[in-house]
Image (cartoon, rainbow, N blue to C red; front, side, top):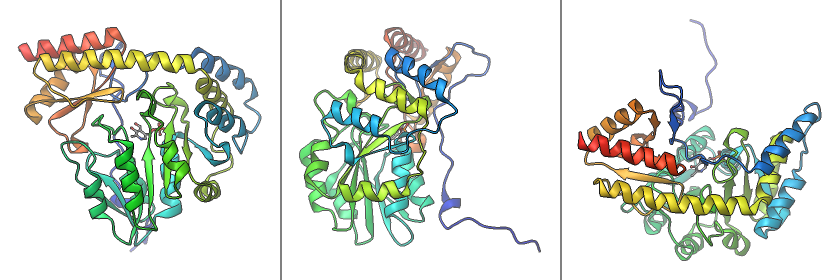
Amino acid sequence: MTQIITPQPGIMDVALYQGGASHIAGQDNALKLSSNENPFGPSPAALKAYETAGRQLHRYPSSDHAELRGAIAEVYALDPARIICGAGSDEIITFLCQAYAGPNTEVIHTEHGFAMYRISALVAGATPVEVCEHERVTDVDAILAACTDKTRLVFLANPNNPTGTMIGLGDIARLADALPPKALLVLDGAYAEYVEGYDGGAALVDSRQNVVMTRTFSKIYGLGGLRIGWGYGPAHVIDVLNRVRGPFNLGNSALAAAEAAVRDVAYVDHCRSENARWRTWLADGLAEIGLPSDVSLANFVLARFSSQQEAEACDTYLQSKGLIVRRVAGYKLPTCLRITVGDESGCRRVVHAVRQFKEG
Ligand SMILES: Cc1ncc(COP(=O)(O)O)c(C=O)c1O
């Protein structure tokens, strides 16, 4: 019998990541509200920087990302030496699992947590441990109860995707302070910029040795297609992650676009306030039609239907109207649909279509 090579333990347990759909068969102008992208796209300054950097495609990019780290540090008042950049925050999550998780260790994530935590833990050979949330909100006590001496990483998205809910910094500090000594708390701030006055946990990182923050350019910065994210952590963690990171993990154009994007603070402020305005409008509009949602702090709303059947029928109806939203049964929320906050016309279109669906 022919022998074939087999992968490392854990890898065949990975269910392939299901991204948000981007096309509807037969519809050329479908509106994509399924991947939490910025409806306004990136800052014009980022687009310009991207085009200029495109003239240097024969050159290898910077390997230390000093300019981008410097820009992030200036804008967010952080220590540039303790920033690491990756191909999306997905790559930072992967580095953390590669570096700290492995066979005979455990990686905690919450019930409705982002899918990549489980995938990256399995790929590293670790055991993912899912912890219940309380009514779609992170439960710090449940996380602490799930910790063992095998726990190495605790992933917490705040605000969380796909629920949109978040917990306060006091609760997060309590969690960090009670973790087992060998465990790191990873605060995923993919949606942190949408929350007025929230530092994503940066101050907790500065005051502790066991907290790491991840951030992305894919959401409010509108650069999901370029794959840029970053992490901020204690010096000992960033040193470890840089040993795992490939030297040229980000291209020239991505680095240049991200640097210009982070410096365009006025554009980000504009996107944040538009999002807040239309998020409220969208959530209120859906509630009026009988679809409640938790207060979302992110750039999407998780609409709750009376049954899985109704949620799926609404999704099918929306598709027939050229609207793509996200089914979240894979996140253990089969009766919900996650709808990204679009611009004014996108929000109006989606509420109008859901109302038509409800009126039958
Ligand atoms: C909570 C959360 N973390 C991380 C990511 C990954 O973002 P990226 O790899 O594009 O930076 C996402 C993307 O949807 C997310 O929702």
